[in-house]
Amino acid sequence: MRERKEKQDIVGLKNKNLSGAAKKRLQWLMKNKGLSYKEAREKCQEAMPVRDNPKLKRSSTESTPDAISKKPRTEGLSLPKAIGDKPEGLGREAAQSTSFKEAPESIKVGVMHADHPESTLTGDQMKAFKKSIFERIKDGTEAIKPSFSGLQFKSGWISVICSNPETEKWLMKIVPEVKPWDGANLKAVGEKDFPKFHAFMAFFPESHDEPNEDILKLVEGQNDGLNATHWVIVKRNEEKTAAQLILLIDETQLNKLKAANYRINYKFGKVTLYPRSEKKKPTVVAKQSTSKYP
Image (cartoon, rainbow, N blue to C red; front, side, top):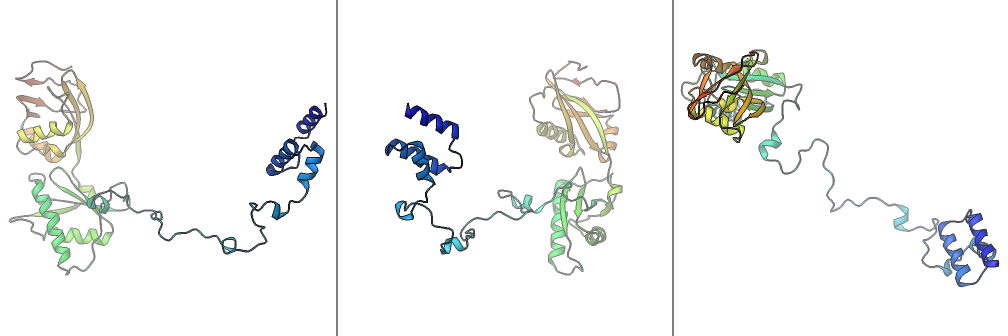
């Protein structure tokens, strides 16, 4: 009866005002020492001598070197990188370049043939231009220290991102002067004079399982004067065994496409490119397939 009442007292009081350690001690005293709840509770409220429990932490009044100052240990640790550092694992070129989105205040300059769009730059000529700029900087005779945020090869021309107006002015001046190859005749233009893009739609037969890159490589490899690998694919659908592509093609290619009546060689036949604004659906004419794609 007494034990039941003590348990009720414990439940009713819920060990009010006792710490977690005191509650455990109270239960231990009742179970192992045979004390009543009241006796055990009074015992728990008494101060416990330090000698009776050597495992207790030292008093906050005691001073030790660790207690006086606890500073984080940084020696030998790998600290977080500063904001803006490039992630590890990127190649050298990726670490040094900046995308157009990352440089909203940057100034873009286009580099192209002087008679653009009649003449366009090849991939090798673009690389030669880059090398000539590096050589110009290395000779140490320039009045400024040019700063760039990136460079992109376009379809027959180059877009260079200058980090400041001084670099833009310098680049506009020297582009006509550099001669990356014999007979080179280059010009630099501002962003407002960049070539414009035009949207086209086409069906490429027997290509539903072909990667976009391979389709464009085939187009470029079978058609003179088309820099198809620089075309931008904005959408792709599969129609039976054909790949339907929505393409962005800059105006440097328009004269060549018009001259061919917008029909290009592809695999063992021809494909028609239709301006995206037209409602007329294209019909693929090819030796390997006579199917019409609605």
